[in-house]
Length: 244
Image 1 (cartoon, helix red, strand yellow):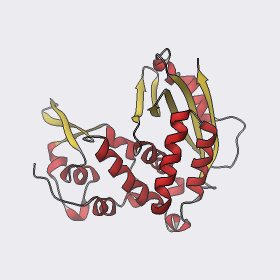
Image 2 (cartoon, one colour):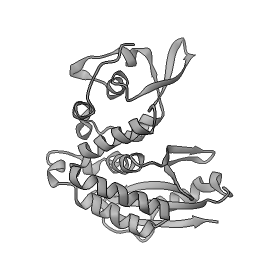
Image 3 (cartoon, rainbow, N blue to C red):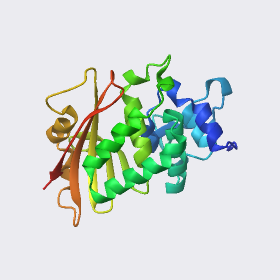
Image 4 (cartoon, rainbow, N blue to C red):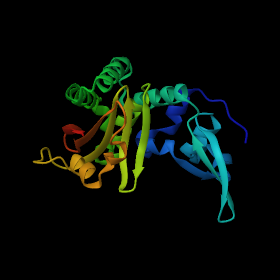
């Protein structure tokens, strides 16, 4: 399997993630066949093929099923993950100049357990995304867009990230671990502007996603629900509860 050289800026451009509506958290848990890894048709490039061929995904292990060879892929290390997600942030938001400052603020909030300020930062983040990103695009209608932008910011930090965190009750959108805090997160996108209750937080509680982290020594566990509005193109509600 020959690797092809490609700069990370060219990579983000070729992926054209705005148009393909690619759901970024799936990059952490991919199983593919050898056919996908070796296919390289420039006019119909598969994002997974491109990421593997350029070295941003690597083989964790292989196995045989239904008469085929399968490969479980992973991002090689934190440095590659941070660089990759940083470029995805640029591609999704165009906030190149503001990005590093926002990343530092998000990191500080997560490390300190300051979810009120985190909510404010995320609202500013989406409010700052240029309107031209939505011109001739249905991105505001795509739930994976909001999830991917959020994931890209969290995954670009020096934190432990578990996308689609699986438990016996289902899977949470994302779990983020930083310092003494564990955040079990869920995200919902609505058509209107306001709600009486937070459906994302209710979903976490109903499915008991945070149960697997109860009793972690020296850790504070948080259930966090984010609600985005298609019409407002941003975060309209965020609620959280500590897990005792």
